[in-house]
Amino acid sequence: MSFLKKLGLANFLMLLLCLIILIFAEYLFLSGEKLSGIFLGLWVPTLLGLMIYLKLVANGDK
Image (cartoon, rainbow, N blue to C red; front, side, top):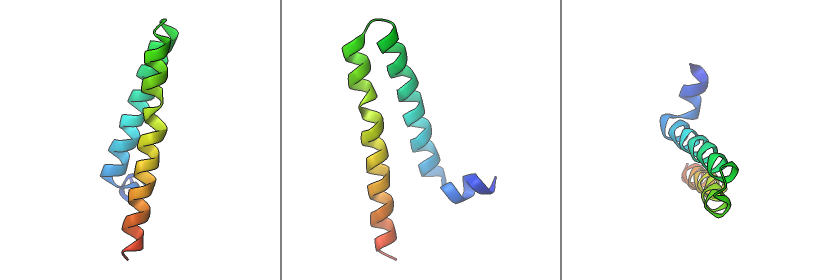
């Protein structure tokens, strides 16, 4: 429980969203929709980068 508290609810939800997107992108890619799977799969590193950026901005204010 302390890991979830340390991570924060917003970060946990963002990571969960990235995991769901990644699983769905893999499903699309393996089912034959290769371009849709690649397009959707590229959102995962974008969201993770945004999460890191927002965390850095928040830590810079302290």
